[in-house]
Length: 192
Length: 104
Image (cartoon, one colour):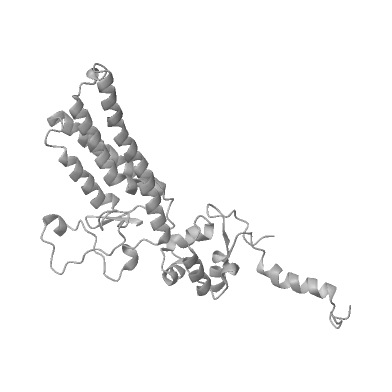
């Protein structure tokens, strides 16, 4: 895990656990707010994909894990792709990616402890994703057995299942990194 | 008095990494670079919060040019001074200088 977050060229010190926890809370609050807004605007009809892109953007900018940017080093433990020419996309030109030198090994590579932490975080996240899959199954059974019970919720069953699917997708993309950011203790500043 | 009085943390292993590092004036970063880990991991190892793989344990021991059991232990370490001079003084007490230890 990196101690500093490179955000559009600005470096933010995230060595303290409380800062990382605050970041996780803010990210999930923002994702929940976006999900609520999308429901109010369109009932997630055709707009559910924005949740996916928002979660991916959160990974790229803050959480890391799947990209070179963000606090958590890439899960695949491989060096980032090197571009010979300037990246064609506007987002790349805006320096969302952190520049990593080819020989800067420690900037992307997880050591054995970090790999252990990564695997443990995925195990814990797997449990949460499993629970979020079980809930819609339970609700579906409830709806078949007691058709009138969920009528007061104000959502159609399809909307409810789709919402839970979006939550599962968001957790799948962001939870392992969030567990790592939440549990890793304060990083030591002194390198001596 | 024990050299490593801290509980071994989550790993259940005691180690002498901090002592050896201080003794030889080696920074965490230098040790981390030599054995190919993050310097934070050296801190976790020193506190006993992380148990190294066999490979890493041997790498660290080789870096200090010591056998692996001199760096890591399941039991708390005794101070090196006691191990060296304690043995010497006890052998001196039982076998004073000038006496032949094989006589008796």
